[in-house]
Length: 573
Image 1 (tube, rainbow, N blue to C red):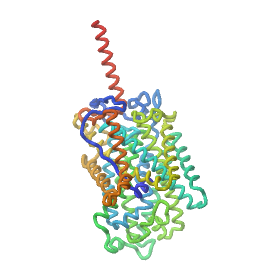
Image 2 (cartoon, one colour):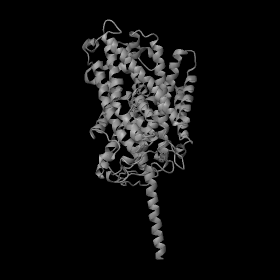
Image 3 (cartoon, rainbow, N blue to C red):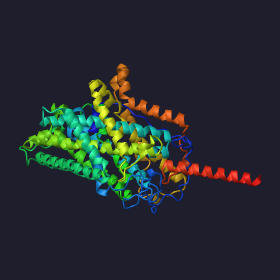
Image 4 (cartoon, rainbow, N blue to C red):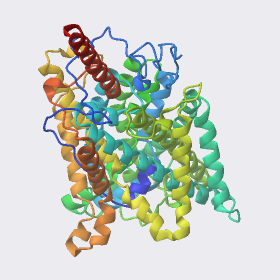
């Protein structure tokens, strides 16, 4: 559901800077690096979340390989199994965008244009996920790409990305719970919507408040529902195309219908390209789960390597089936929305196949997809907030966890913000939609941050004399992958709301590019306040240590040096 919010609204993003200076920690103290020579390698055991300040596998807040925390517990625990992470990554690729408004891409650019746009974005997502996989297996932490931005680019960028990403998920959750209420009213038209929204918030709290494995297990089964639905849809669609379930055979005539397969030329394809990018948002959550994976060195690469086949199977084949069965001129393709399940291309195909109650079935499936989106959003945003607290970018109490390793203060804070965003609708629909629009391109900010962090990490890794064989997983076709991701994200950003540019509608432009403004304010505000600098490649710490651990070591070293100087001075006296 998160991507539907993006499809109906537009905003902006920001790129990271790649010049080099010194990394600063949250309090403005220089965090020195360069100690990576013996910290990486296939023999290194990163099976812990070092958010708590401990070193991998041991000590204060670190997690041992069996999912238990070490002495001095105070961090998250590793309870997510490989199957959980694989299905979470899968669920992140499949959202209500595919179920509800994917037909709109065919209506705008024709069957060929829709396929080209999704294929191009799918290639970018694959390379982006390999970049994230390399970073996450080297340093599996809950803060994920915000931590990587702090360590490999500039602490100010990590601060900006973390807060922007957290706010985006909080507002997305508010949008989703309001939509869930509307879907429930499909069956219970006289029921008050706020009851269903409150019910979903309570469910999400219960799923996330006790143990992380409950979240993982829930996402596993919710993702499985989506997978089964798409497989059934593709099988039925192919049978209809071949004439087995539908007479006469539909064939491929709709691909060349009225000037197809490409309609509207390059501008139309570019417009669909933006929508396709929104549809894939959420895939980056797999990087957040690495911090609580039982075995991130195996789970994350497995999930990443399957992304390519998931894109082909679930997106391209689905778009192919829709394009073959439904003419691009069908007005129903443009009529689908989150609350108009009857116009879903999936519903239309199922009804053509003679499936009774197709609308009710799809309503239930979309509802489970929304539950999955809110559940994933609560998990990702609470871990991001927890990670920022551990790095000193958020209040310290948000970095506390329960005995079971759940960052409950961060979770409750996130859900409270969701409730406030949802209740903002009392000020009128315009204010609420402004909130929705204002965070529209946060996913692209995260993607660019991931790509930039990977570029600088790999260059620093090689500059400091390391070999790729030392990494547990390394991205393929470097540096093509991250460069492609940055270029395509820039194209998406620059292509936002061109009519507002042409007409000089500044109010709409501010809303559209509010994410750019927000990230810029956060970045430069933190940079000037804490005097941070971009991390030089030669000084970058490419080990699995977190920024706050590096800061503590630097402060300890300074303290030791000062003590020695005082002792020497006392001896001379």
